[in-house]
Image (tube, rainbow, N blue to C red):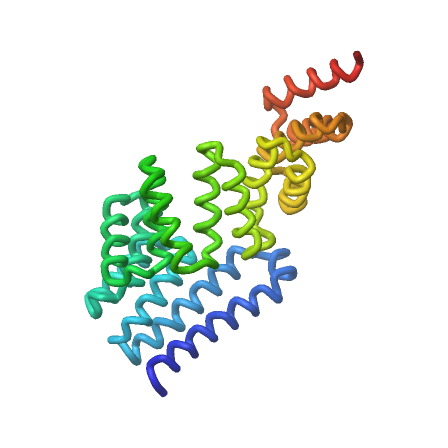
Length: 278
């Protein structure tokens, strides 16, 4: 069996473990979901480690192991796996990118930047590394460099919905709402149930006075998560503007059912009820 076929077999095994867990999720959630998640995590990691026992020089397997650790938020073990991959193959641009992502999530931003730079030095067409480096630049409030990297992330992978989404959010901050909506449109076309992009698109629709469009997006967001407070506030404001007062009142009351002491919701509810009586 070739190395690539062996890795494929391990990947399939991990996916099958995940599918089995998903199919039994309803029953398992009634008992101890944390145990089953942990058990599935251990199975997938042990599967890769077993493969490495038979092929310990396989760089791709170390990258796969690191990604599996990251999937379970075990960033330090992920970094250790990527370090081994890079010791075996210093030109493994994916390992640099993923290690940078793990460093970023641990708050080691300068080390993350180094890894993203190295990944792109080796492969200047790698969309994911441009996107990750853009997150770093955005974190330090350098929107110009962030937008440049996002443009490249999209140039080299026009299906990178996260890059579209992030670029839209940056444009939104600069009140470029029409351009932001276009980016959110692309993100949503790639992931129709992308709640984050739907929420941010609703904000731009709201700012442009496209209230019915904003309401449609907010309804989708709140169907997914009925207790999302920021979306409830925006929808209440949109409903007031559309003169749907009772619906707006319902949203403020919903906020207060989630957060009894939310001063802003109390204030807005008093105002809207007072205006209704006039």
